[in-house]
Image (cartoon, rainbow, N blue to C red):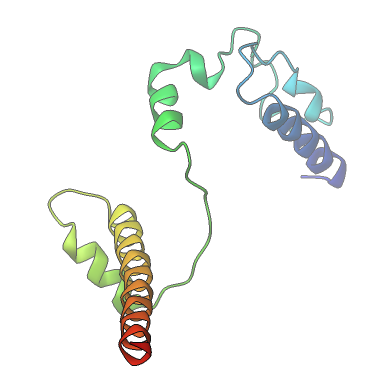
Length: 128
């Protein structure tokens, strides 16, 4: 792939990303990307393409992922293996990791609250 082709692909993908959520079909002629005969998409017709909202399975996936953000994270292999082992037979280890992080946050917040209440009670006893 040439540098020019790479730039054209990036422009095409940026145009698609900019229109995500738009109900219009994408009518960009991707065959223009490959003008030197490499022709991976040459002749493909995207004029009847649907947005993700127009495809029920994709719409469900988008709805399920609302409020979530895709990240890249490095975890120790044994930690990741433990989470994967916990969901064998069904389930999603990523959801389990998310749940474990939420529990840790709530416990930590609760610990701070308990500590503050204890300190305030002790101070009130001392002052009385």
